[in-house]
Amino acid sequence: MADRFFPNDMPNSVPETDDPSAAGAVGSSSSLLKLLSLPYSKTAERFLRAGLDLKEKVVKETWVRAGRRVKDFSLYTGALGTAFLLLKSYQVTGDRRDLTLCNEIVRGCDSASQGSKYVTFICGRAGVCALGAVVAKHTGDEALLNHYLKAFQEINLPPGVPNELLYGRAGYLWACSFLNKHVGDGTIPSTHMIEIAKEIITDGRKLSNKGSCPLMYEWHGTKYWGAAHGLAGIMHVLMDMDLKPEECEFVKGTLAYMIQNCFRSGNYPSSEGKDTDRLVHWCHGAPGLALTFNKAALVFKDEQFLRAATDAAEVVWNRGLLKRVGVCHGVSGNAHVFLSLYRSTGNVEYLYRAKAFTCFLLDKANQLIAEGKMHSGDRPYSLFEGQAGMAYLFLNMVKPSESLFPAYEL
Ligand SMILES: [Zn+2]
Image (cartoon, rainbow, N blue to C red):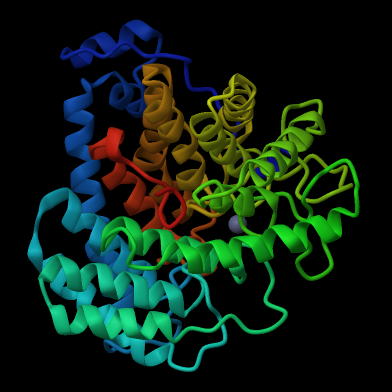
């Protein structure tokens, strides 16, 4: 188990000081501790510089060196992830060159995703059309906005589509919510979204089969619990829908069922009945669950969910310094758990923890990757598996109160 993550020996807090020599007072003069002891404004400058440099590198590796052509259009491992990072960079700096390039990449993704059978934001055509529409709105290009909205409306959910986030109904609904938030309320009518949410609930009730968990789903024959393919991701999206009280109870009951059945360690099984306590990822395990519980605490105003979120975050602090960099199953994704809790609670201890994970990456990731001690991802510059995810985290840390887990938190 221990070989999946680095032991977290960072202190629970480090006083910030303008005097770099005072870093020695905490017992070590390591570069990481010095970084942690800087005043936040100075650390944020470092994050900004590192985020922008890494963004340039990601663009070069995934777009320029690819001949400005799109092979993999997905946000998860492909070109749309680079476009999403460019939009974030524009939001942080206001540099319109990022917006122009983002637009160009989304156009490439638009051509490459024609006829794709995948319908979600993260892995499918809905992501291309929704992001295209939002960028067109920012650039004030009405014709392009209409093009992407029309293309979005032409997406049909195929029969037998799963319910999970990466390939299923939940991932399509997330794209609808993203459009309504960034283009305007009612861009996708709520009647359309409710219809799909009801299909998700009906499927979940069927598979629950009056079991102790009110909603249950399968993806490729496995009843997953995590954010990517399972209950955490589906519940996360359902909480943004206009549900009836009875449907809300199904969602709450499903979350409570998972809380009652967590491992003794506080971590969560990757799927129903699985007893190996191994993965502490956004996709499988405590990090994805923590984000969903944190949202549930805000939506349902119920203390049990905030407690579950903070308990899961404790697991992430202890076992979440993974030997990978990305947001799906890497340190960058896990850092977002603390950012999310900082946003919802205002507790600066969570900001410190997010800062600690981010400083760990800033200080050590390059060297650990070069030494072969850390994996840079199968697609090393992608948003979900690679360094684009790390760049996204750096940019989120510049304005932590406005940070969101990419393509997951709204
Ligand atoms: Zn993953």
